[in-house]
Length: 431
Image (cartoon, rainbow, N blue to C red; front, side):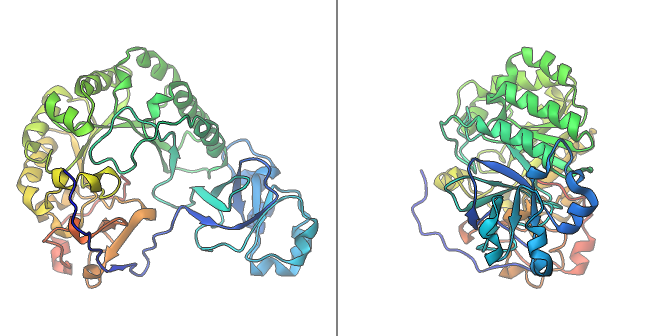
């Protein structure tokens, strides 16, 4: 039963050098006839690279020039360049004769920056950022549909036909930057659009082979063995599947995902991924329903899925369905440190890589610091006032932007430099 108590919001803060930016904002928008993606670049990048600023096939009409105050002296000249659009801080008189798409007067001028890939649609003032240059959390979003209904789902599924995301993602891959980085693929459940997903994986392999792909899936539809051949044909060697397994038994797992038979389907899907030669990450969201048998779960993973290359133990994101199911899910992380310690070290000493995601560093047993990752995506990451004097903010995941005191551990406290020295930090990964 969901809790009916009033949620108290803590005092939030954005510490120096740490910025939480939205992935959309409002603009005044002119000349948009159809949905369109643009790569935003400066005049300097346009002159030096042109369409070479994009990883794949692109034309000048896929580019949007970023014309800030430094460009006003040559504004008329820049507005004559045959590109797809222009982004300006305000609406000057010279725009009267421009037929290209024009974005002006942003509600938040920091949201869209040079290097970003944005999406605009007719009849809407909302500009979505689909790719942010330098971000740690760029994502190819597949669908809002899902065949499970997890109790802690941060983005409750919708029963809609949103296949248009497939073409959007294929175009997005063409417009991103070249260079090594990770691109996520998520939903919803991406495998619901099987042919589209395979096309996206193959296109990414051909256009940006240097980028790793991390694909989140519940694995249920992968129980169909015909996926094995399809994945072998695509043969993306830099792809990892992140698949959640919430228990060492069917009853508990199926309860968490609210889908009878899901445990058997996911296990079959994991074995099919292994047969297809795929890299596999097992994901566990830490809650009241999952932490009690965490050591037994770790034994199950080692004995039944010894081929997995990584296990992610993840704090819960307190949004979406998690808020509705608070009473079933919430457990103070301070109360499952023994189980977390047992599971993490059991897997680690047996050669399975382990990471701990989405928890504030101060709630962990210091011996678990070696497994810790600064994991929360930059666009939804924040710190609270209690973090102001903490020495670990550069290494800590902090909190989700949906954080409230209702979901806050009693062990939240600032760490000193000496405290931090007890923990071994780890590279930046997103979850």
